[in-house]
Length: 291
Image (tube, rainbow, N blue to C red; front, side):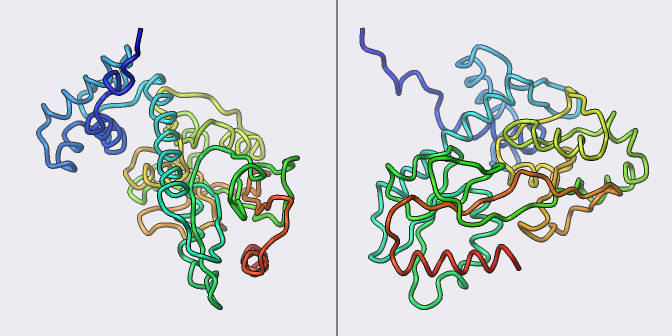
């Protein structure tokens, strides 16, 4: 029997409604954002929920909150969409001759690479950015460099240099006064915004000597940039990567410690001959990582 793959998938406009509802915290806000009616958002979310076979959101009087199933679904679909975007970059457009192809996450590209692009592209160098949330085999791909997130120690590549990160809890300024002097209450009541899993907050809490408990109000958003956006939208507390980018104006650091954790960004390259342009980019990134 032939499986109708495309006929079985929910429409993209329905997936868009789910992501915007999760980001804004309510169907009404999602409707305003997308210039649609509340009923349309509700109907589109229901289409995806019917396709999944479970509820993505808890409906509350003042908005919606992603269920645990919903958080996992959003995280996985976000990764798939990022991979599709990266596939277009790799297959749909050939990089310019002499371009240095860098594979990294969308968050690192957004917060670190793009603001420094002009410095990295001096002297005729052209960078081609490919984003993906998944670890890919550099030896089998056509990428010149990659910047991976984690604790390092990858056996399949040559690690060039690392950018260690100090993590600080941040929240929207309007909520900072509520929690800044009450760390005990903070960890019992504040919704925590997680990246792809709970490992970063677990590492931070271990350094702080605090027991991390999972709350129904916590959110797994699937991407560091989304955790920062979620904090800006007053959805909870994110861990800000201090060395990666300036703190957004809407956010404030809580009166809690910043910790240098093992998780950080590492510049890696495949074990093959490099072009002069690639060597030039490596040297500039080394300087920027250490500045």
